[in-house]
Length: 69
Image (cartoon, one colour):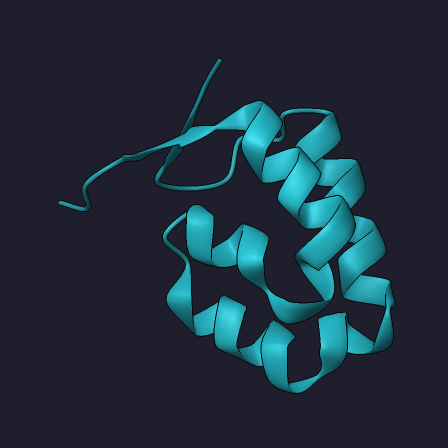
């Protein structure tokens, strides 16, 4: 059974906007694998970065992530 990681929603959103190109938001959520992929592709050439901003802003329920204020 996987452990749920608590992530501060506001901090993750701000970091995603400014440093999402480097996968910082994914590292905060405990998703190291996708964080590394995002890092080496510069946010999926901008597309992944934009999609993540939208998903985080709408408090999308990522697997194994619980949003806290």
